[in-house]
Image (tube, rainbow, N blue to C red):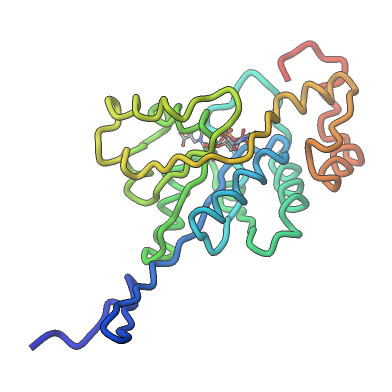
Length: 233
Ligand code: DND
């Protein structure tokens, strides 16, 4: 006799007229970033990933202590968190997490994806990155653990080639590579470093970041320290 149960956390099968409809597992996106500051390139990549992979929600996760950023100015985590909040608040499918802000020590991605996986192992978790970030993943702490707990979406980004992803196979092996999903997104040649450089030079950042973020930066002088400085921005 066939077992009379369905593993509902994996899929639901509904028989109708001999055909089988399969409802896929729930899928959620994780958009990690320094967001120093958040800009339209981040938002477009997250929304394109949400659409393409049918993600219920995308959770934005500003780094508390970015593990790899050194040699340039990183704004206070609370400022980056609030700017991220202002940028995403109008999108019902975007959420915000303090998990990395509230965790002490460097904000390693493997800790974060393990945290979300443990919250709900039945969900397919997709960690969204740009092409530049994914090509660096072998330098991240504990990449094997990241691939165990999540799939990765690699969004195209002007200046970086998604074709290079296959070169990661040598370092990562074949199996992890099947868990990286390249995604063409509308090209926006915007970067946080370019925005900080413009702020340092007193140039406009209008239309590069959401208006509320632009106003927050001005009102709180978030990048005041850069003005007139010759240090890398
Ligand atoms: P970024 O500093 O590049 O963030 O960090 C991205 C994520 O990687 C964060 O969650 C980090 O914690 C994690 N990371 C990095 C290094 C080491 C480790 C972890 C580790 O665990 O050892 P940004 O704010 O600069 O950018 C956020 C994302 O948005 C990135 O993936 C970036 O590639 C992407 N992006 C764009 N994508 C498309 N078009 C644009 C983009 N600008 C940024 N214009």
